[in-house]
Amino acid sequence: MAVNPDLADWASDMFGQLGEISVKAMFGGAGIYCDGVMFALIGRDDEIYLKAEGVLASALRAGGSTPFTYTRDGAARTMGYWRIPEDGLDDPEEACMWASRSLDIARAAQRG
Image (cartoon, rainbow, N blue to C red; front, side):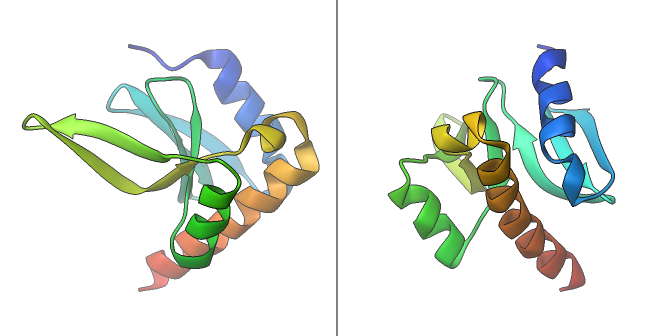
């Protein structure tokens, strides 16, 4: 299944103020990168998920978000990515606020 090009373009435009955005196909979805750091993904369900842990994951959960899940060996598994809240899909400032926090987490993880 290919990634919805309109959604990839939307993500590039929406998060462009954070830096150089690129979208790269992977595993039926796509990774969303800022300056070479993957901070979000587009799932097969055409939803955008942001890298999150700790306080950010809790805030996303409180905002009605759900984690990215997939099935492997017959079992549901999750990763450290949470669906962008609905409000963020309609409000560029809110989308970038969530994405900026996600990018901070991704950069910290990359530094080790």
